[in-house]
Image (tube, rainbow, N blue to C red; front, side, top):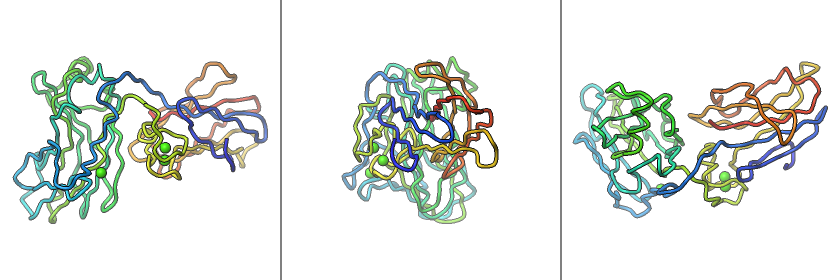
Length: 305
Ligand SMILES: [Ca+2]
Ligand SMILES: [Ca+2]
Ligand SMILES: [Ca+2]
């Protein structure tokens, strides 16, 4: 526990106890699964000019690395936007292969629309099995500001396959990933400019904590905080409900493109029951009012899904 009722996740098993109008505790936990492989290797493009085997598959745009990220430029206004405006992808060994065996759970990267909002950005990957392609529509990126995306790749929920595959196909395809990247559809109203950086597969938490804020780089990418900024981390606090005689209000800093589950238990160690799941982020902060907290001892978990 730190000052002012702020709770910080320390590794995977942070436990924090506080006292308010009555005794209860707050526990923040990330649900991780992990094995090993080429996870945690960040493609930083830190050497200017090197694309590191990343490819742009359109003649409408050009791609460069001015030093530290990929830079995709549509130098003129083409016709109407098209789904095949641009794919930025890689087929290098670090990112392809058996995601199931590697324990890949998420892919994290940063994306910026430099001057104009795109019509959409998809995250895509292809399977070597029959060339099936899976994609997910991402929340629209901010203009002229990095948007941090972490895409859950371990679940078929929310993934679309134009060939109509389901959960079984998703599972078998993710054992043979052959291509992974980002697809941009232009706004087609201006010259357009897009940036990509910090691409990394997540699956195992090696505990590295680059900014020494007590939360690992892996956990920060999952939560959406900045692994290079010690003032940025996943934190939550709780308050008594000021407008009612009972109830606990949980608050946590929430991030783009994430949903949360709140669970409650009555003893430690003990079981936790979900109070609510699929809670969308209400940036910059989420509030959850547990009106059924009426005076016992309660323990809470907030999970980044
Ligand atoms: Ca970089
Ligand atoms: Ca950290
Ligand atoms: Ca941090």
